[in-house]
Length: 417
Image (cartoon, rainbow, N blue to C red; front, side, top):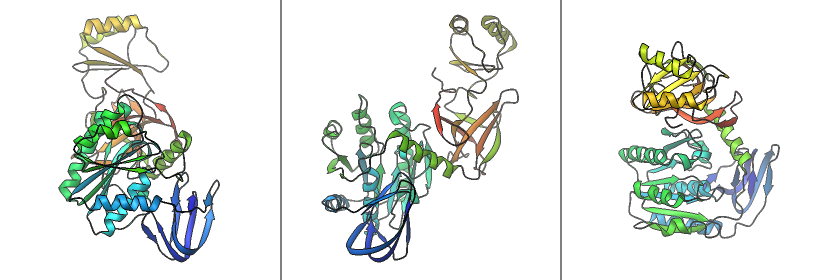
């Protein structure tokens, strides 16, 4: 039986499991909006069901889905421990469901089991645009139940423009997992499988995280270029279930926005001084003020006085007033004189930028929304529920409005133009 959320299901009688996790009598199973969960019923069962707007129930034959997943799990569990399993596939191929099933199979074998969720756009173990991990001691019906023990902020919901960052984050998280000791590690990946860089990216993932096995979930042969390029690693291919619910971009976006709300619950505006905090991978905070003569030269070349300037080794940040513009010719003149890249932005360009917050040991604390930069006082105002001491801010590329809706992308403080 397939249940599309938003819905809640309570088992009154019978023997039922969800992706390998048993459903207890009178247990209330909540299916989130935009999600589908399969209930595997042995013989007969009785339920009490509440359906929200757009929810539905489908009675279907189990077919060979359960057996093929069970066979793959048995093969993986038979490998020498510790084992790292990388799961790849297109969006809506069933990666998350299979990862949940695989984690539950390992837990039932009393193995020390861990999940790393590296699906930036549809992350369940951590906020959107992050990769997170935690150990799993009991069977779970939805990875969303798992709270991240540690996370790595990438700041983008797509890996295509952040390949090195994704690799860096996965290596960081896996090192932490291995330091804690693990028997069975499952890594869920993003659904990016098309494009020139994809094969090399996925192969690099498998090689650099030292995967023991790669599971490819495909509908036809769409993963062949990726799987054929893998060497020295066990490859298992399983079919994508026909019953997987396809989700369009709008539905995926909605799920992310619900997740932003979850991870920003109870948030308030906090102020952070540029003098006391590190801003990672950003032109803002990477340099210092211009000396008087250099500032006067800059003003003369631009023909106007900027609100704020900051000079680093390879880039000059120029902040203008809102709705103020400068033509290309003066900017080129500044670049020729200062012999470095000039980054021109405006007050307010930063509003709504998603940020990650870290402590002094570089551990992830949570996310926030940059609401304003007071350039005169050199203060950043961030909407966040993080209460611990923050040492580092990581600026992302996602812009959110006051209702946590994604309204665009921005590279406002990126060191590249």
